[in-house]
Image (cartoon, rainbow, N blue to C red; front, side, top):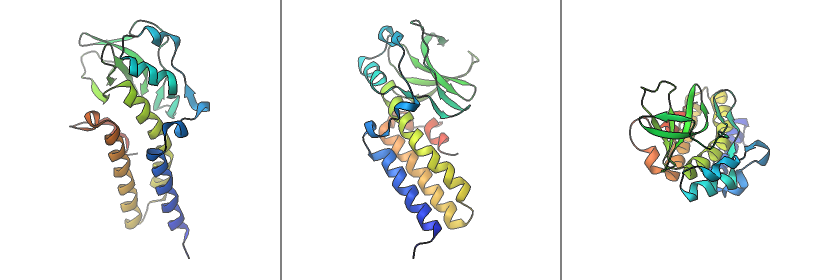
Length: 189
């Protein structure tokens, strides 16, 4: 007879599989969506990025007070770093999340103009998908952190966390490679 721990493991595996295998249409929660503002029609970003942002929007709050999407309403880029302009998409703790003019690459930007930018996703399209899938996976990881006390439970948590990182990397290999891959760091809840 399965015990409580087996139920937790099975539920976590099932939910994480759903988070990364189900079509995005089944993951997006319209009640938690912040829609792309009308200004995006004039943003200088690739058409595919604009279409995906318009279609799915972004999760308003991935983690309240820590990771929130609030796309700028203005036509002109709200941020400028190293000679590049960025459209503000949201915030990660005290840092800004911005999409670069022209490329649509999404960076985490310090409020200090002299600080370096960190690539979060290679496109807005990938950012939208990673954000929604991460939003679906995060509650499971948090539940597992609270549950994992024994060595085998900690191993299970570490395996699931690594699995989430691999799934994010499969969506956007460019952003997942190299030192400082931010989605991988975010899986360490």
